[in-house]
Length: 248
Image 1 (cartoon, one colour):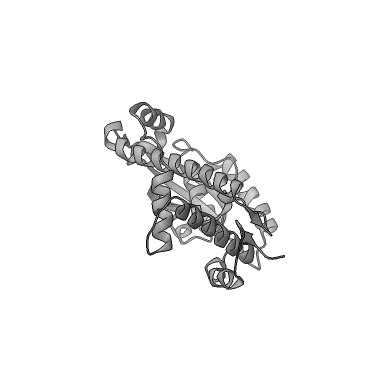
Image 2 (image 1 turned 90 degrees about the horizontal axis):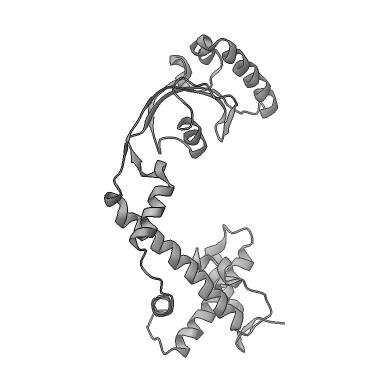
């Protein structure tokens, strides 16, 4: 049985044309079919509401503009968001750090590296003064030549998991566990912290308002799509509106 939307068949050629845009999806065919059906639902709704435009994308955008509306984020909502994420609204935070990297390679599998790294970490917990020596001996990072020193690092300078640990450690603290990233296993120590400054609420009020507005609009859009899909007569496949790449 073929696929139809409100009694109108979906042509296989539409799906084939859409398929080229979904090659990176986990299920390209399913993703393309969902996209074609959802666009058909949206275009039919636009036609029912008398929304016209030469381009299909323009018609869908006009439909969203008319039917999906959310109130502006008020001052209290923006202030609550600002107060709930104090670390996000700081500037200039720096840490001076060093690390020892144990890089995974075909000749050095993860299990073997982990055993070595755990032994080195245990040694440093007893004799922290050996950090530079052991970095020079074991680290697979160029920084090993200078005792593992990474210099001063600000937010956004490292991969997220490395940054999260760096800015959680106290000055002089050696991480009590190995950190695993795509580069391998790390022993990490923060030597010094340089505190930044809090960004005033007035400076980021507009930015926060835009973000809250975008989040609210996205939620409203997903709800609207679920409503449209739920009342459409779709045969031949089950479609979850919010799963469509169209609304990511």
